[in-house]
Amino acid sequence: MTEAYLGLGSNIGDKAAMLAAAVEGLAATPGIAVTARSHDYRTPPWGDTDQDWFLNAAVGIETRLSPHALLETCLAIEAALGRVRERRWGPRVIDIDVLHYAGAEVSDARLVLPHRFVRERAFVLVPLAEIAPDLVIGGETVTGALAKLDRTGIEPV
Image (cartoon, rainbow, N blue to C red; front, side, top):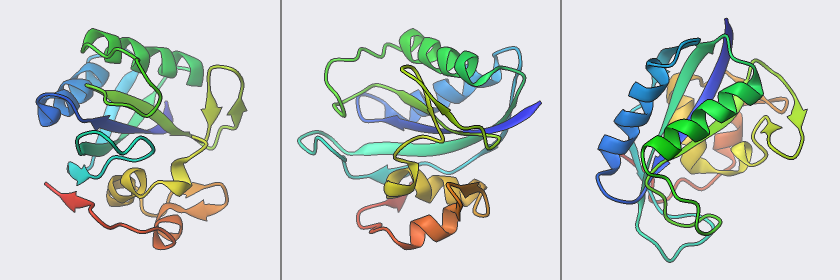
C-alpha cells in the first residue's frame, strides 16, 4: 500500500454532504483505505472569485492504485456525484485533487505530482496541515509552506 493525500472542495449545494459522499466513495473503492480526514474548512473562492464560498478538507489514504488509476478513480467519483466541468476554477459540486502520492513525481498531460499549486494555496494546506503537518512536498513541510501564506477567511466548521 502507498500513502497519498487528496484535497476535497465543494461550493454548490450541500457542501458538507458532498465532501462526506466523496470520502465515502473513496472508502468504498477497492484498493483504497482512508486513514485520515481533516475537519471541514470554510474558505473564500480562489482564482475565479465571483462565486460562493467553498468547503474544503483533506484526506490521507493508503492505496494499491497507481497515481493515474487514483486520478481516474477521483474523476469517476466526481462524475458520480454530479460534477460538470464548465469553467476553470469555477463553481463545483465536488472537486477531488490528488495532492501527493508517496513522493512520486509525475508530469504529463493528465497528472502532475505533487499537485502543481499545493504549496501556493492556503485553502489546501490548512486542512492538509491538520492531518499531515510534517509531510514534505517539494522539499518543504506542509507547515513550513503554510507559514508563508495568508490564511484570511479560512475557518474551521
